[in-house]
Image (tube, rainbow, N blue to C red; front, side, top):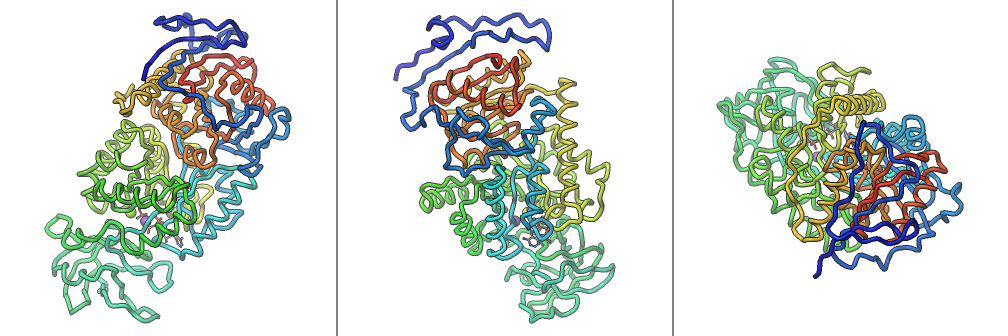
Length: 588
Ligand SMILES: Nc1ncnc2c1ncn2[C@@H]1O[C@H](COP(=O)(O)OP(=O)(O)O)[C@@H](O)[C@H]1O
Ligand SMILES: C=C(OP(=O)(O)O)C(=O)O
Ligand SMILES: [K+]
Ligand SMILES: [Mg+2]
């Protein structure tokens, strides 16, 4: 395959010029608000790695616009194309439109927000309120609720996307097969008081559940546990000491009182270390998980999160399973880092996955709590290096389950995750069953925007060493283009990066660079658009585009201008994975 590198200026603006092996002349940069003249002809660097014209691309007169989770999207069904000539017929949801119009796009939120959906947020109106409040992804946790319940939530999110133009992605989180309590016979919680004797048993009980009795899901529990062991509920929210074993029943005395929640996770500790006896041999994906995964595939969820991943093997196995089961859907796999094994095999797990979650709830039950912050920083950093989106999860705003304002410590925790520039922050109980789901989301949103702005103003971003991730030469070219475009965007203080991408890869490579400006990602596929909605700084639009960048840009400009989302003079850098090009231009 021959590789050539040349620079050209699009023919419609000036004659096609070729300057072999000559760098793009960089204009002097006197000030950070430096702007090129409005009629500045687009400069383009085109690197052709292979024949890059796309036979499947739609005729360029057909354009579909959508937008992101800081805002909106298409009101028309996904398959409908809208003629670009009739710009007024392009529907963009009110949230994005307002945000871009009022604040300009430099101040849009870069950190993405995930909400766990539960009884407090499952109606259409509640889901809509979350989408309006900035939810980029809805998480359903298969530990709780019935499949019918989850199905109805998925249907409502879909309807919300179709009717209101959002691109809210759906993530199904598997239960996993670690040890946990039963469901408390329908009660929402049970209070364990200091010194009380409770029975943990593998026996199934008739309802009503006998008083101070807890069912345990793992058959080997009574055998593995020893008198004197410490039993931790939810990583230490409640503690018991094992005092007696009677057949399948384990009698325990409460040593740290607290609320027991349905299906809470259980770990036991001996002489200060986590006991990992035979339960360490439990399969990562239980038989129930497999049924849930089939359900997720048939419902066409965008992401599946795998609990208690121990090695890359399970991810690879599941990937081939999904590929065989669903030829035309592309489900991304998120590895939940929440066990000692997952930390040991971190790099291979992240490499095999499409993203990771710092699942601090269970992680904090498996390693000493004081080690969780450094583990988080390491996971976030590694994910960015390997170009995988990363979600920071659990207890970000835990007190907001009950109270309308967060603690100062919680705000500091959220700020730290934003400052680490994780792709996404997640709400669990705060949105699933808390008193103030919308307020909790609003706190995540305002803290994200404020910290991002502060960090940009302070120019505190440390340049991160980004190792090459591509193996094929054309991937290396894409990577170089994105690294350069992001650097140019910062140096020229451009208003936005535009990326035209078929499969989303170029968009994530740009996101990985965490540039100072937002990234407008145009993609032809609705599912790629939803997937990109999880990634830092991306404002995903759905758009049918051709491989003629000049016409793509002109159409995009007129479309966005007509909606007041960009204006003449805005400086934009555009990259494309069809042409492998970088163009710098002012919006005409
Ligand atoms: N689908 C659901 N149905 C009922 N309750 C739910 C559902 N999803 C979440 N919850 C509630 O929200 C709490 C927090 O959610 P999450 O953190 O996802 O689960 P867990 O606490 O089991 O790790 C759960 O403990 C449960 O009480
Ligand atoms: C997100 C987590 O997983 P789950 O809520 O399913 O236990 C966690 O453990 O932090
Ligand atoms: K789970
Ligand atoms: Mg967990």
